[in-house]
Length: 278
Image (spheres, helix red, strand yellow):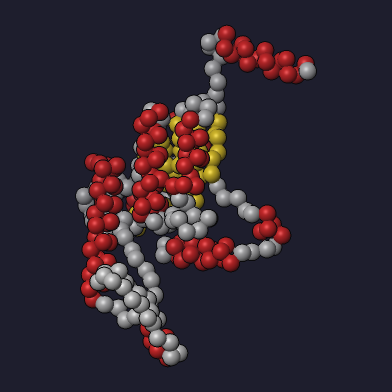
């Protein structure tokens, strides 16, 4: 009872004495993993929405920091997440800082550009501003097994890029057109967010990626810095962090149990990270 009364008194004093200021706080949103909708371990707008909203509204933060480690994924989900962060930042007039860990490539870099500035480790991988579509084809395998693929449609373009049928030139051309449109959107977004900070010494939009220091010289990021030292520099030595996001392991995983979906997610993420030698 005594402790409770003392706590109530200290809270009341903060309201009565204006010069007793609280320590500044920064909300940190961890954005780690591939970006998509099909697997529960991936980053997507639906799952992140409540976390992002809490980060911007709970406790009146001085800023929001994005801690990013993502090789990319869905361009639509990347756009949705980035737009949500920008919308809340502008609505509440809160600055946003991005800090890249191992990688912010493709859609991961899209997320980074939602921030007002981007900071990296010298070994961080940044860029890969491009679009990719990957699949498989197995028509010969089916033929060897004596399996016949039967697909019936009422319109010409309903069945496209069927992996169990030989690839068609018109399907590839149609897909290429779609990829070009998505790439144009990506390029426009990066130019809009980074503006005149981007270097014109090299083509930044070929899908190439760079280490942190080179990315800084190209204007893709603002410099080298780690999260805590930079936030202390910007908001004082007494800044405190409020963490949002991050993966939580399921109860069964602690007892060695594994679901098939978890294995597929791991393989998919492994393939994404492997593109960057990670």
